[in-house]
Length: 426
Image (cartoon, rainbow, N blue to C red; front, side, top):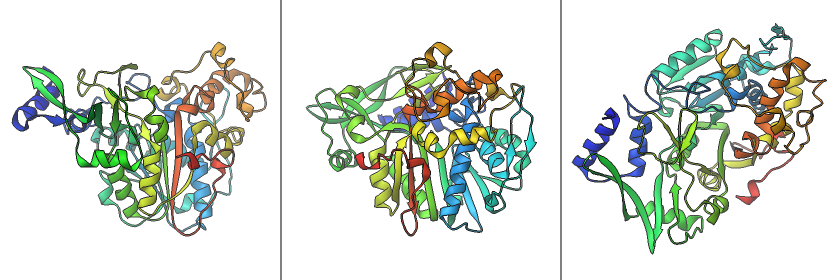
C-alpha cells in the first residue's frame, strides 16, 4: 500500500473521520511523503505541471520590472526586500534578479549573452528571501541562484521574518492551500474522509461555524447538490503576511475567480483538480503524495480579507492584460528573451501549435500579431509562441489573475493596471 495512504488510514482509525482539509494537508505537506515536501517533487515538462516561469523567462523579467516600479513609488527605500513564497525550482527568482541586475540577452541560438548598462539603482538595495520548506527544492534553488548568493537567503516559514519593507510575491501558491469541501443537501454539509477496510471514503457531516460565516460574508447561496471548496487558509496567510509587512506590496498570481463566478451554477461540481504526469483528474484519493491537488482562488475573499487586515487593494486583472500594460514588448525589445536549449526549462512547457495561434484574438501588443520582426529573430518563432502562452486569451493570460495589495500611506497607481483594473467587481 502507498505509505502515505497507510499513514492517513491509521490517523483516521485513531481519530475518526478527518476533514478533507486535513487529508489534503497530509497529501501535499506530510514531512516525509507529502507531494510538496518529498525529494522526487518535479515541476515542468518531466513533472506533473508547469507554471508561467517555466513557459518563458520573460515572465520573471516583467515581474522584475514590477519590483522596480514598486521600489520607485515607495521613494526608493535603502532596503527593499522581495519575499517569494513557494518558489518552485527558483526560475522566477533568477529571472527577476538577472533583470534587476541589468543582465541582458539569452542563451538561445542566435542571441549572445551580454551585460548592459541600465540605471536600475534598485539592485544594490534589494534582498531576495525565498520561503521554502522542501529541503531538496531549497538545494536546487541555491544551485540555480549561486551567482546571487550575496542577494539571496532562505527561510522555512514566514514566522522567521520581521519588519519587511518591500514586496511579498507568490505565483500559484494559494491554489495549493488545503481546502474544505462542502455539499448542499437540504442544508450545508462538509465532506470528511473516513475508511472502509483499506478504502478511503467520503462522509457528509455538519459544517463548522467558520464555513457558515464564510458563505454569509460573501452572500453565497448554493443550490441543491452543489459541491465546492472553501479556502480558509488564505485568511490566516494574509494575516501572517500583513503582520510582517511594515510597508510595501503583496503581489499574488494565481488562477481563480471573483466569488460570484466561483460559486455560479457553471461550477456546481467545484474547481478541485489533481495533476499527475501532466494529466488532470478529479480523484484526490489516488496517487496520494504522488499528485498535485489544487483548487481555484476566490479573489473576492483575498480582497476583502486583505482589506480587513489593513491592506489596500491596488488592482486586479488577468495576467495577460497586466503583462501587456506593464510593457512586456518593451522588455523583449531589451532582449530579455529565453533560456538556452541546454537549460531544461526551455523545453519544459507545452506551447500552442502555429495553427492554434492563428485562432487567438488580437490584443494591444506587438506579440499578438505575427509581425515579430522588430522584436525577435525569425529563428525564434517558437519563443514567440511560448510568450503568447503567457498573455493571450484561452492561455495563462486569461486563466491566471494578478492582484496587488499595498500597506502604507497613499494609494499608489501601478502601470500593470492601466489598461484594465477589475478590482471593483470583486
